[in-house]
Each structure stands twice: as C-alpha cells, then as structure tokens.
Length: 244
Length: 319
Image (cartoon, rainbow over all chains, first blue to last red; front, side, top):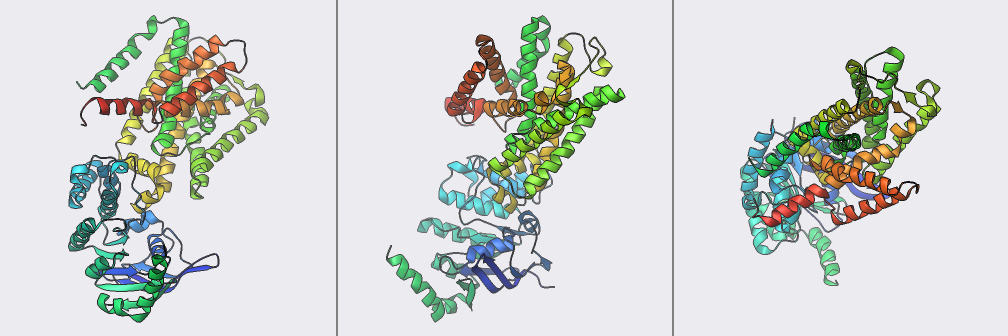
C-alpha cells in the first residue's frame, strides 16, 4: 500500500472540452508539492476531482491506499484530505470561530471539544483577536486565513491550498508563507496551487506544471522554472496579460 | 438575572397566568398566535436553521390531521396516540420527499417548488379519495369533555395544550441550535459546498432536520383537528398552512429560537384586525395583510430578532 496521495491517468472532460488528461501525481507524507500552470490549465479542476466535487472521466485517485473516486466531498474530508477554495467561501453569517468549529466537528466528539480545537486553530492562524467577528466583516486577507483555518480544523494529513495568496499584498503574502511553513511543521503535507512564483518556489519540495490539462514538467522547483516548455507556456500568458 | 432571561421568565408567567381571565375572543386569538408560532418553530428547524425553504409543510400538517382523525373515527384510537402515528408517517413522507429533492441537488427555489408540489399532490389525493372523506372532509364528533380522547369543554384546555407544544418545540430548536447538528445546518445554509468540504454530510443533515420538522408539524395537524373538530383537504393540505408556518418564522427571524413565536405575536393580530376591519369585502383583508408583509420584509430583512439584536449592538459596547 502506498501512503499519501496517488493519482494515475486522471482525465476529465466537460462535453467536448478535455479539461484534464492522463494526469499523474503523487504527494508523499510530509511533502509540499506545488501545482502551477497558466490560467485555465486545469489546476482547480484537479482539486475538484481530488476533493470529490467532480467525478473523473478516467483514472484513479487513491489516498493512503483508499480509492477516492465516487466518494462525496464530506467523506473525503473525513479520510483526512481537506481543501480550500480559490474564491473564499466562508460561512458569511457565522463568526470566525464558528466557521472553524464546523471543520473541527470532523474530529471533535462534542461542541465543547470542537470549540476548544477551533479556538486553538484560530489563534494558530493569527485570527485570535477577531474570532467573534462575523466572517462577512473580515478583510480578504483574514478570510483567506479563515479558509485555511477551517480546512486545518478538519484534521487533515493532506491539505490542498487553492491560491490562498491571490489578491494579497507582499506583507500579507510573507505572513501566509510563514503560516504554510508552520502548518507543514504540524505534520501536514500540502498540495498548493499558486500564481505567486516567489512563494511557490520558496515553499515547494517539488513542482508540477500543468498546461492545457496535461503535465508538461515535473521536478525540483529551480530546474522546472528554467524548463523551456514551462517558460514558453508562461510567456504566452505574459504576452496576453501585457495587453490588458 | 440577565435582561433576556428575565423577559423570558416574565413572558412565560404571563402566558401561564393571564388566559383564564381573558374573554373568549381574546383567548381564541391567543390560541391562534401560539398555533402559528408552533408551526413557525417547526418550519424553522429546516427552513430557518438549514436555509431550505419548504413551501409545502402543509403536507406534513395534513398527514398528521388526517392520520389521527381517521384512527380516532375508524378504530377509536385516542388522538394522543394518533398524533404520534401521524408524526411518524409525516416524518416518513418528509424523508421520502426530502431524499428525492436533496439527492438530486435541488436547492433554493427549486426545493421550495417541489415541496409545494408534494403538498398540492396530497391535497388532490385527499379531495378525490372517498375513504378519507373526499372534499367534504371529516368531522370530529362528540364535543364535551373527554381529556383522554383529546377533547375538552371550552377553549382554555386547548390553550394549555398548544402552549406546551410551543414551549416543547422551542426547547427542541434551542437544543438543535447548540448541537453539532445546529452548526452543520448553519454551515449548509451559508454555503453548502463549503460545508461538504468541511466534512459536513449535507444530505444526512438536511434529512434529519426534515424528519424532526415534519414530525412536529404533523402534531400541529392533530391539534388543529381536535380544536376545530373539522378538517378538509384545502384547510389542512392547502398553501395557507404552509405559508402560515413560514411567515412568522421569517418575519420574526429565521434561524432563531424566539423568532417564530415573536413573528406570530405580530402577524396573527394584524391578520385578525385586517379581517375584522374589512369584513364583507372579500379578499381586501388579504391584500392589506400582504402590503404589511411587504413593508416588514423590506425594512426588517433579518426579522424582528435580527432588528432587536442590531439595536442592542448599536446601543451598548460590543460584548
């Protein structure tokens, strides 16, 4: 039995559009893997497939030996695999602490224990002073932290982070990088989608590059960043973005 | 004692002590207030806490009313037991309707429309089914006092029955609100995908809320049958009952313990007054009632409880 996440030959098509094809990926326990690629490359689709929000058209997804294909998102979360959303999805009317409690119920036996665990994690991500603020009144940076805290509260062995730095300023990005390091020190392995290259190069043990739904490169971050195919895929996008 | 707790204790004392002193009409209005407050509290479990707006709770209400009444008329089973049977049947129907709706991902207005259709379907079945009295309905005979058969002389005992039912429903709501299920329901209401991603089994949670809500709503149907001694398909399965439950909850404050009862204390007298003032002009009272509703919902989007809370937050320093 392999431990960690193991994806073999993953494919997903929406009608005629092949969003992901023949995609292989592993995340070993204790590893931080970065998943990068231009916009529309299929990164978020891969997350949706792993977390059970979409059913794959082909391929196998296993986590610590158990197949995830066909499981509902909540069942996958119970197995110890949590995710965050690219567009933050807080429970807007609940306070920060209550948001995290919802995740903590995944492991906690009762309300008091969930509250205790959630309070610890709210402090851990640095939201302690704002624990009783309704999520809708938090700043974007705080809502990103809340998103991470809620995922972390479910007690995952693997956490999928989907662009938790998007829209943040450099200071906030530094803070999130520190937070991700501390999460890793808790023994959680991470699969990270990120556009902030500086951050992903600093954090990842290994980089996987997705382009048009296919893996075009994989390896040590510094080597992958110099890979001509990767540079080409990104240059196309830079040219497009330059015209905006 | 904190002011909120004091207000609850005072209100409870008044509700216990005052009714024997009231004239008959006032007592009837008070029974109506508690009755719609009860339906609101039942609806609130799924609709308020879980954000699943059922427009068809009359289905459960009617099942309760018909089950206990038919068991009483045909087999002589006391409605006290019949109401449990009605509750179990209604919960079964709720699980069936809920499973079909939730399993296939019906959310928001689509869920509302499907529940409305289920209630209308049962109404049409009852209208056309001779064995259950068809459109003529059923009469609960033998007025006079028989407490073991859920029959009382005078209105006062019915008042205390519905008062106990309301208090019971509110205590159940309070227990749910503070439990793991309460957090799960709130998470589903706020964002179902994020709830699932956080490990909440949305289908199981919604079905549990549906079962409790439909069971309790059916008990209200039995109360109605015994109190008015007459039921027919449009009275029990009609949209008026579905709306009569959801309105007090929304106006009072969906997803709060006190909201439905508070809402009924405001709405039911308004409905009584408009009916009395506009007597003889068919439909005019409902138009005026509708206008008042539109104003309340426009100016108090979070209901009376939400309004009171925001006033308190403005008045004092944040707790």
